[in-house]
Image (cartoon, rainbow, N blue to C red; front, side, top):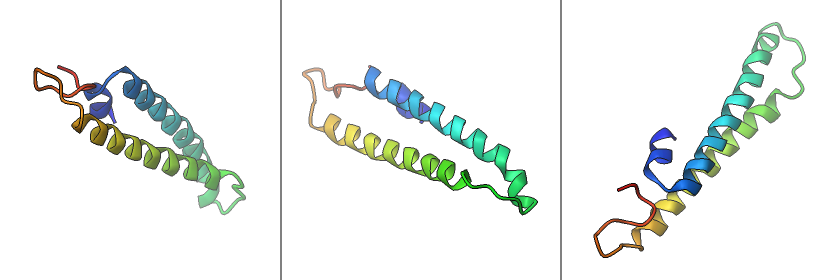
Length: 86
């Protein structure tokens, strides 16, 4: 995600950092609830946090693919693609 954020324009960089923040937050909540799983105690929301983590990551991968495909068609006069850092 860091390389994707560094390689593309400001919008994708902001989106990548927001995704990283959501992953860190939900991962922290999941990690804090992990001892309750080992102790066989109820963890009613842990599945929600895990699904948010997976879903956010998969949406980020889809956005990366879309950004790469859109950038392929926009070649400027100097041979660089729009959105890529020069």
